[in-house]
Amino acid sequence: MDPITYFDQYARRYTPYKGGSWCYEDGCIYRGLRLLFEATGEDRWTAHLHRLVDRQVASDGKLLGYDPAEYNIDHILAGRVLFPLAAETGDGRYKTAADQLASQLETHPRILAGNYWHKQRYPHQVWLDGLYMGLPFQIEYALATGNSALIVDALRQFETALARTATAKGLYVHGYDDSRKQSWADPITGKSSTVWARAVGWLAMALIDTLALLPNDKATDALRLNTNRLLEEVMARQTPSGFWLQVLDEPDLAGNYEESSASAMFAYALLRYARLGLSQADRAGVAGRRALEALISGRLVADDQGITRLTTIVGVAGLGGFEGNYRDGSPGYYLSEQVVADDAKGVGPLMMAFAEDQLLSGATGRQGTASSR
Image (cartoon, rainbow, N blue to C red; front, top):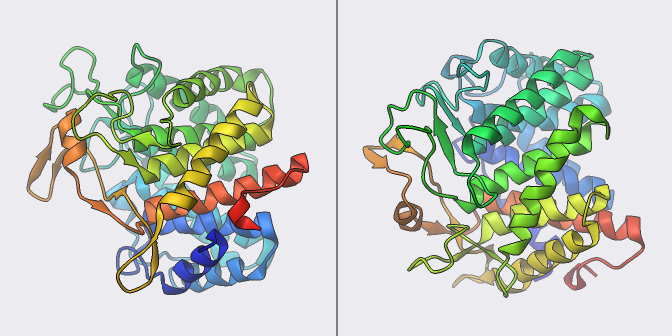
């Protein structure tokens, strides 16, 4: 099945990830649908978007099931779709909803260095996931409201989070505990022990989206340098089949496997990196396209009912206590989590990667992926 047909069918059958409550998983799909519209100009993607978003945003702008007192940074991500919806419809409820999310960030707890806690229930912790969940929204809100201090704050948070999660190999571990109280955290550095591919995928997308939003000037020099370095390391670890491993930097680890959601995230980041014309743009475009084509040709598989699904997605992974289990952050832990199909955390980034390939193809005058024609 060609990817456009798959995305359309997926969106038609998609139901809210958490029973309708505002959440980041739905936000992954919203972001994918929005980028598909930008790449193709086809109204069906906007129609899908409105069908899904509008039942979560009330007429007064309140978000279904959203409680800012949870101080969950994940809840911020889906808010990125509110900016284009507000601009294109003139409907004030979208701006009001964005204001609610920005208000959460005003009082969101932070570690001493200034980074947002991942969640109230994970105090003093910074996870790479959270950089994507919160900071691009904060920058978009700053641009929409003229509050440049929010941009300065976001760039500072990137700098400190990267410094606290960096490895000697040029990659980044999943999390950091400022309190050093979690058993998954190194008692000296506060770092978790493992380079989880999807965590680095969230980071790569956060960095690329931030560079796309801000001007190429001195204020973003450090971020650009860190992005260049990270994507060089990512490209060096792409497998011969075009994917990336679940535990990114341990190819000899028994049971390690090529995981789809991280591969889609890296495909998107590399393709957008190429379209921005950053360092090694040509190499990045080739690597991103190779991953995208591998996902389309090898991971879109019909199930026993004949429904095409995106396969080999790790369902969830985290750090610390969750549903009665303690996630210790070891390499073996990341290989123990359930592998699923059609999860929004994989499909949304695949939509985004496909859309970015179409936009890059238009910018360079080349053809998109073979299966898109």
